[in-house]
Length: 381
Image (tube, rainbow, N blue to C red; front, side, top):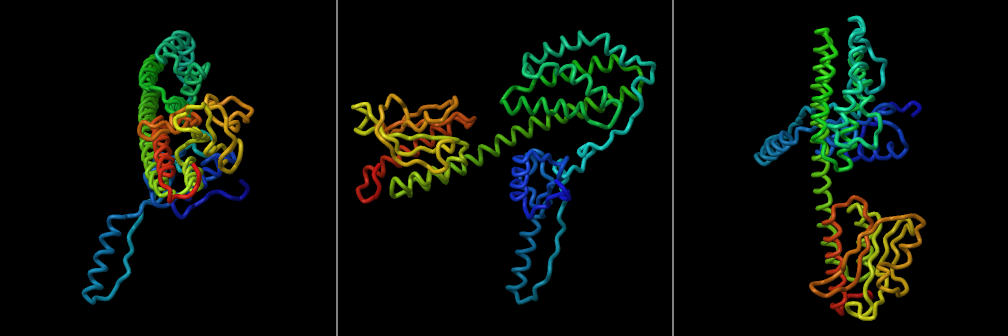
């Protein structure tokens, strides 16, 4: 990053944009550059990494504003008001130990008791691996050797301030959560691991240190679960706002061109990477032909594609969809208004909740039907 050490943004939204741009360039936060925002919006807690920011006293600001207004209405002179803000430290600034990869400092040699920890751990290694593997129920099948990784990282964290075990466990949990897996088995894994590790430790100070590590690991796991739940909630709320705005704009669309313009602008916000809508040429598909109303697919064209030649409706979408030279998954939905079938919608499967596809298809169907039936509206549908 050269001489740039940090980005301090005017607000959290700008900070999120900076984080996104840095991640696209594979610049690690906060290891290579720190990022700080301002406002402490709800998403700041659940960003990756959580955003260091500044919280404004919004309630006090509102109260102070009303007091000033009342004083002015009563003819009293205006006064300057200064309210304190609160700095909220999170991981994006690297303010916590180990974030910048500083050299770990020894907490004492684990083998100072005559090597009993390493000896005991080596003797029960196979048994521990078997118990951990059974408790995991195949959750980490894509990460061979994860059991050994936990053992090595725990030993290192027991020796130093590296937090390697806590981070390794947290990364595993976050990986599961990103895939929508149930992470309840992780608590059982930590319980089994704790029992074996404590059985290997005779030194009281090291046992206390180990208990601190496991407590931190449990808290970190719980925080990751809460983080994931909050992200899902925030995403649901964001999608609901986009769907609401899309519905209003489609209702106001006075032509097929306006409909396509709304679709092209709103689909990215719904998490839909590509979408093809075709309409039947004659009613509810009596002759088995359809034509493309619009095709939104950045892999085919940076602009939304409007119209196209008729094609057999059993092909489900126009030829543009099949021009991409790679395998893709689509879901096919009926575009209808009431009981009348108007056409078909093919949308790419990209992890977007299924209700989004269905709601969007209903919106498009209602808009198409309204444009067809209203002779005063322009544009051919």
